[in-house]
Length: 145
Image (tube, rainbow, N blue to C red):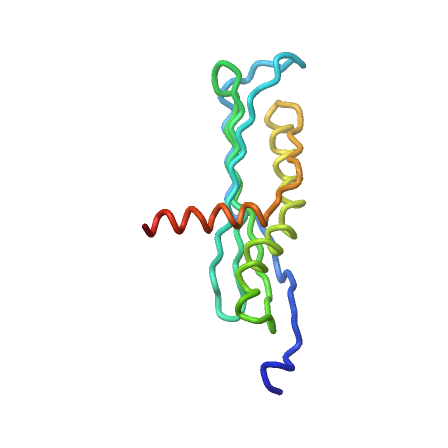
């Protein structure tokens, strides 16, 4: 079978928490007012491992009022099979589609960790991974210049 006829495949073989850290800096009860400032930073890391790809969705969240309330860091990873796609489609699949598949699981872990840490659950809004991909590409270009 030649490469043009190769069947396309995208699938998750496994997913897991690679690293999770929750620092409860200020454990006073939170009322409805005032709302804390929540800073969410997210990035995607890719590693090729034999025929598969390890995709890491790395999230750092800091909540503050006048002082820090908590810091959560999560590295949620998946092992993906990505086969049969043209080379020009590979990066968008790895940096957009794969993290999009991991996100609901990471979001659930974040919500339950924050709740178990003594705070109201934190439900992250859906992430535009295409925009995140563009930001990472721009950041790489600026670093190389």
